[in-house]
Length: 466
Ligand code: FAD
Ligand code: NAI
Image 1 (cartoon, rainbow, N blue to C red):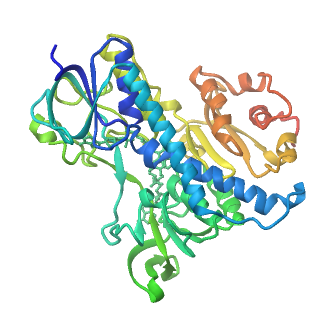
Image 2 (image 1 turned 120 degrees about the horizontal axis):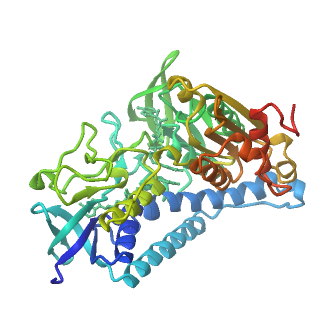
Image 3 (image 1 turned 135 degrees about the vertical axis):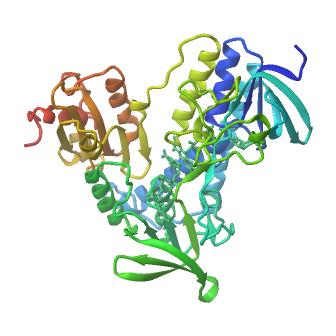
């Protein structure tokens, strides 16, 4: 096999692509990994999951000291050095993308930096610093996604921005309007609000974090409002115009008619769309669906033999861990193993404080699907560790099938819910019942005891609440 011919070519080095490449190399394939970005790790490591979590952490440290320090004996005037905060974020990203590069090198994966396009069914042209023509027995499209641009509110990179700029502002805006109260809107809205911006969040639907239980959305709204975010629900953005003193005015229609918001920055976070432009999918005859996603079957195969797709560029939740699992499953399938992704048990988290996490179905989805459920709830205000650590805002909700007691969904609003949800995922992965959780020993004092109590509450026998 020559240098330009591989068992597997992976297009896109995000969590889907680079993890697929690593697993395939582990399984003995010769692998090429192509990305147009100068560093590996894709959206997630470079401009998504990791930088946003670094900013959330820095600003959590800030609020802990500034807003809650006094009762712990921490006093004094606390100042923000935005430059240092951004430098810390950049260094976290640098370490991680460097780590991925080392892993890829150690597995002898050949990296091509440049834009990939199909020049045939099994050949790829790479156009970059060094142009290349490579061929693969198998090709994986893992080119990810980008922010949705509203036609009446086009990005200008200055005043109307996406998360790409929203994680890297050079100054703290006095006023920021966030369009969309989903994961990005709530996370980055929180970051800039903690740093001192007045943040208004405009949401089209009548609730924030709309993919969670109604009750969770309401609780999250109450808590985030208390922290300083202002929400405008059932409000449809219609356009913008220039305001006074270099400001921008966002135009919208709320339930009571037209409204305007003056801002220094408008962060648009209304979802993401697949990236396929430039790939020349038509050269290879690869089909996409009506939402621009590459069409695949349950084995990630496109309509063209030997061409597969995974991650944000196909259907399903746009989450890094979903993309990674698909990358592993695909590599294993190609090696003749039984790769598999359990789509019913993919956790989702919004990393505000408290964090908002879920796995499985919501109460509303259970109703829509005709599944009768018993629900147990436990408020964190009744949890000892929560009381001892200023973390009483939150709740754990367990939904179990009314007939079998099998857990069908868990929602957690709690500090570190992102970590707590892992136990819920494991229980559900093994088909566990609420009774199983209720009979599992949980360390005391921990927030995880709230999960046990919520499971007990499914059978109306919570011990530490009525
Ligand atoms: P991507 O990570 O998007 O990677 C695709 C890669 O393909 C990119 O590097 C791109 O340069 C490359 N590419 C595209 N076209 C070409 C081409 N023609 N030639 C060569 N290369 C190409 N998810 C979570 O699970 N948890 C989080 O906390 C989280 N936080 C997020 C925060 C933000 C601000 C954003 C924007 C997203 C966040 N996400 C999070 C979502 C997560 O980033 C994505 O789900 C994940 O990155 C998808 O992985 P992927 O491999 O499919 O694609
Ligand atoms: P999202 O889909 O999470 O939320 C978008 C929000 O915008 C929704 O509430 C929607 O109702 C609202 N909306 C849509 N059109 C609107 C309009 N015209 N006006 C006002 N509101 C409107 O999308 P988001 O936040 O942009 O994130 C994109 C993707 O990135 C998501 O799929 C998410 O899973 C992923 N992500 C995940 C994170 C995590 O796991 N913590 C963090 C950030 C992003």
